[in-house]
Length: 261
Image (cartoon, rainbow, N blue to C red; front, side, top):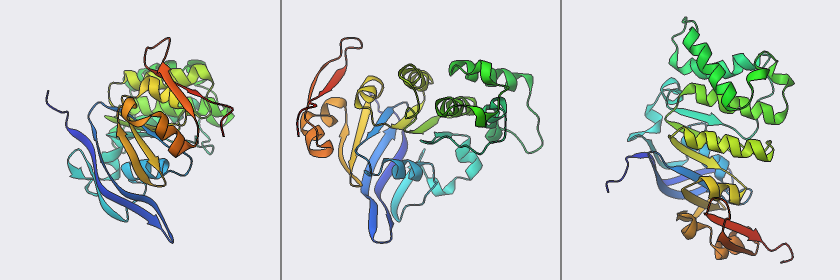
């Protein structure tokens, strides 16, 4: 079977700040259509790696290619037409309605003086329905709860119609139901998704590949069986665990030993 073309290709990626290397010689690729989980303890470099992939930060050395070209060759607008980003902390400074915030996903595909069409409005409403915010469209974004703000940002990403979705801890402020819904929506988009996530059981349920980071280096890269082993959980996260079959989705389930040092 032919491999899908690489959406991202990183080679010897290094990013450092004075007196500290944050990302240390990372090399990996992400194929079209993969749902990749970036996992690792706090400070492992997950958010920094995502910022390199949407060009928020420029690596100190090494290369990042997006769809076969150096990512530095893309304009900000052309990247925004292809890559949607949902950050860990939703913004809190929008003096806009929820409708207006979700509609911002239309911007990369609009010319400067164009107006939203009825079709655009319907797309925004569908996205709001997808994240259970249809009844909040007329409210001010700043009046939403943290979890509702995060769902609005997911809806904005849906409206953007990207080919790649990058998510940095998107489930942090969500209750269990909405955690499952947000990741299910991302999965159903049938595009390339890279998500940093702390809940390893959630990651196991949705991701088909994993990149395990620790101290800025890739410790393992591959399937769940290759990456989230009991040995890696102990050596990287410092926790003892057992892995068995999940009773609902049939995939792996991690059970932690709460009494272990």
